[in-house]
Amino acid sequence: MTEVAPPAPACVSGMWRAVATDPADQANARLPLRRETDHFALHWVGELVTAADAEAAGKHLEYVWGEFIGRIGYPEPDCTRAEKRKVSVFVGADYGLIGGADNLGQLGTWIGLGGVRDRFGLAHERTHALQVGSGGLRDSPFTGWLFESHANWMTHQLPEFGPRPIARCCRSTIRTSTLAPRGCDTATGSSWSI
Image (tube, rainbow, N blue to C red; front, side):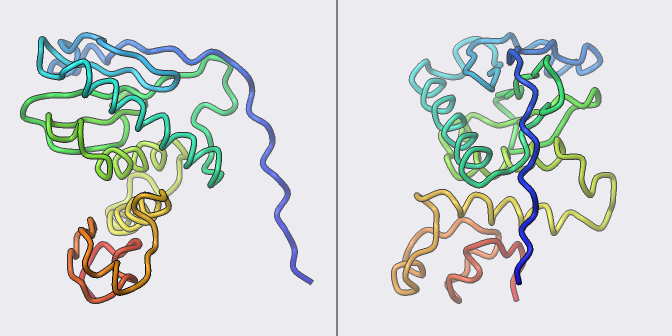
């Protein structure tokens, strides 16, 4: 007989609000809040991001939220709090793609200009923010590979990046760190070459 885990308790209801940037974070504290979605607060300076790109990124992040939290069942950040904190998304001209939390524990994503249009990258880094928000396996020098593999796996659960027949998969633009067409097994989470 297979035992099934009991369902997770329902989250406390509350309002999602943008939070102030850590004032000690001089690089990001200067980036004004420019756009909000239900769960995300996007920050950038000047005309770095077009309105169309900001809207598309916000829509994609909300889609990823719905897939990861709604469909897959990943734990919702701030589940036990009535004061819900939106995930901060900081866009800087010289940023790469990073997800996690700031020194105050506020979930965030730090992306460069190209990252605004990178649907795979946004989902991957969103996973890193969720990983930090769930509180598991943090502050260890031994978990980086697991976090990267898990972020790749989560992103490949989205229909646009999901499993495909092997012939089609190996001809596609696989976005794992292996980038090798050895088989679709490497496209669904592996973060190193095997």
